[in-house]
Length: 108
Image (cartoon, rainbow, N blue to C red; front, side, top):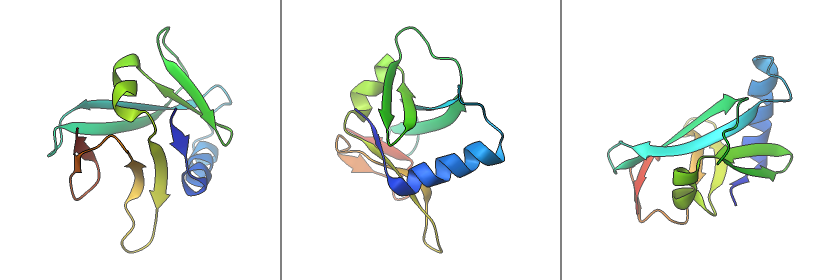
């Protein structure tokens, strides 16, 4: 399962409202090769699920992950930080052995 914090949920809902997204939209999370640690997180809004997608719902937010990415993301929490030292959205991934300083990439 993938989780979302209350702060991330509030931010997602704000963006959802600002961009006039429909109830059919959801948050798609994936992992691709790249970044300074080898793997990088991707996140966007989507409204087209694929047949093999894993679909989770936490705190009323639908999170969708492709089959390859779920292997890297099980147990991960999507969080949000703001302020002078805030990073925006970031992932608390218990599977990551190493993360880069910006938090956008990781390795196992």
